[in-house]
Length: 319
Image (cartoon, rainbow, N blue to C red; front, side, top):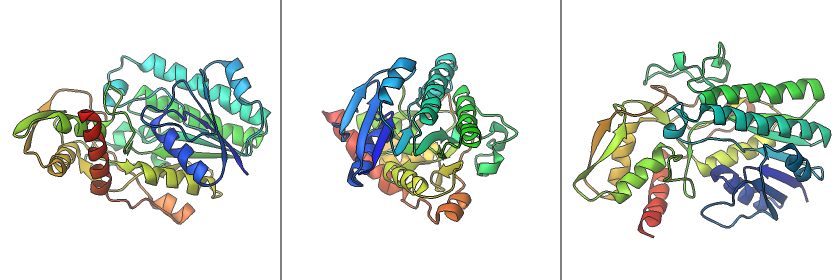
């Protein structure tokens, strides 16, 4: 039986990843500062603690693991990342976690480590046209991420890749593009656009309006959680260290996304665009490299994933 350590196992992606690893017959130790919010963890062992603390991290790495999945980070949606109010915490907290973890992976001779980076590493200057963003893996430099969150992710990518070069650490680095689905945050300020819009529409009465930040013409692609976990699995079982995009190429404007959700809800909802943090004008995953390196790329339809997510959030709102 293979052993895996999942850091950030109480989070949205981490909790789904734990389920997949258990399906693959792994022994899984999960670690986070909180339990999964919406379901019981599938991990064999789950430890609550602060990965910023060296001594705690050392206790977690009290054995060697075949694989480590490092998803723990200080993160959230546009309302958390793009206001500037949380920049110092985001950079300090996430950097400290990664510095602790990468060193212990070398010390404990970990078989393979996966690091979850983000599409936020891509330069803002390549994402000014909402219809033609450039997010190929080789476009990350010259660096100019749109947020301090993106800068920290870029730093940590380099951290893991340099440890691979200097200490022979076997790493995999992926850049996630807007992952969504059931059991993700849907309120509280850290939720991302699909969940926030699903919540607003689930709470709205028929023939009413919802607020959408910005002019709504900003574009994104959104990847359903099952495809994200499959991408992680494919990458860890491949031989390319990355970075690789794990995201959808089905780009949509935020206003159009809101209209899609309203249609799924069966309600007649109008959109009121208001001032608010929006990030770059356009972002879309470029999947040429993942297709080439892994002979796979995500192809799950956005509407199918949004419908599943809306129904789940609708139930949460009612309960």
